Length: 82
Image 1 (cartoon, rainbow, N blue to C red):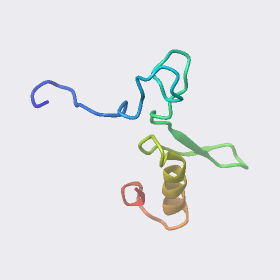
Image 2 (cartoon, rainbow, N blue to C red):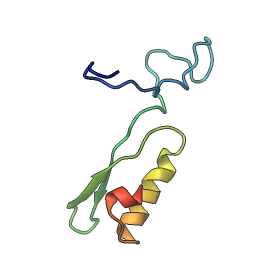
Image 3 (cartoon, rainbow, N blue to C red):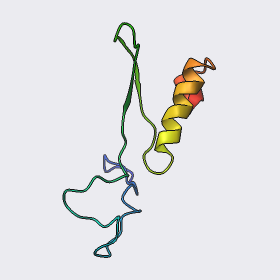
């Protein structure tokens, strides 16, 4: 909200409050609703080349690959790669 110093989001919208549901909110779970960073490391030198991330959820594995291919193989800027 304007003037509050924080933004609202709905990253938890896909959780379920139904007990026993596979995506129910509970302790000791590993939710798929998290922004997971990726590190690109040069295999020969073990040097860090880039760190990046995409929004979490269902498209995250594909999104990481898409950003990687667009920047490395197609020469796009990180913004354009998204």
